[in-house]
Length: 363
Image (cartoon, rainbow, N blue to C red; front, side, top):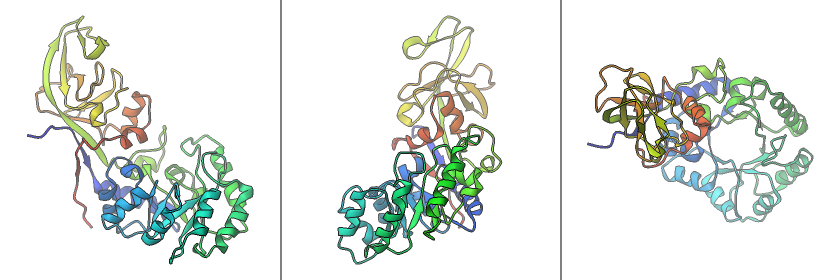
């Protein structure tokens, strides 16, 4: 009998979410972002499930791209952070990897490479996030330089990334959209602005290429209700089971450091799930889990392999009963909020220890 902690990955929900993104991007195209092991969901199974829908994929680095190629994924793959060394140019050319570029070292590596196939290049422009990207003033000369390079395909995409797209009240996203469109106006180049929040809530950001990532996995990038985001379907259900039950009386503590003390006689369920399985250690007492479909509060500290939950108010609880840590009726975002972090982090930090169980896909 296997340990019950596992992540159930609903690939039909994944496809639903991609199709939503694609419909919102039309007539532009949606590039499926599967970096960081598809946000913890498994890059290869996710890419295979989207292979008949997505025209291209996006990853952070060449190692992630090579993993997809080795698994038989044939679509173009965009390296969102570009190349880290000159030798990666030839590997990219051989494997139809597209390159996001933004600095002199990357330009020189591409110009000096000996390749037989011209590479598809995206130019990253810094419109206000100040993390990666060319200055607006440097875009035109960089575009002309890359357009003249024999190793570069003549269709160059111009892209940017939003700093505050998840904040529906912020003016910065509109400013960034206007900045990029103004900077690229005379180039006639295809653009890429919209990430998940851009696709869902900023229609003026939709362009020739769009980059859905977090939304594909069924979680809203927003902290408030949003019409399109609220139709997303959770892809990962993190689940386990009760492995022990006991009663503690008022005044007794539970867990490491005796950080939680019972104020009444309390039924405690111990669950095979801990930070070694991807559950956030910072989750405080009171963080909800679902026991037999009913909410129950975490009590005491999260251990490496176990958590403890107050099930006093749930009838007929038994060892072996199912526990959902997040999924359809309890989002990863909500759990992350209790833990002082974001859904992006709790999903992408899902360790390999936790088995992923994939649903069938009806293609």
